[in-house]
Length: 110
Image (cartoon, rainbow, N blue to C red; front, side):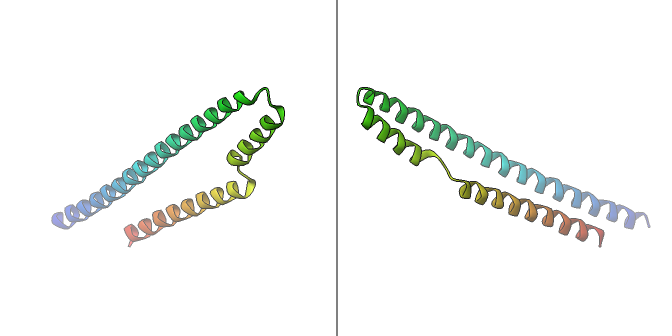
């Protein structure tokens, strides 16, 4: 009886460890993705600043300046469809994460 209790306790601890390891891996992946997003955003901001700075050379040419500003706008401004696609991906990821959690919970209860 004591051996069975210890075995069951050991199995429960292994399951807890597995869940914690899974959470840790998910957190590490999320952190890595956030860091990459930050780097990408900083790079995009640097490019935008450079393009705007280069536009300042056209200050004496209003037509060329207007044209270049319109080009920069078209290059960097996203439309709503792109933002909706990003939101849909986030929803899909969250659904998958919750489903995995529920499946692990069901397995642990069996």
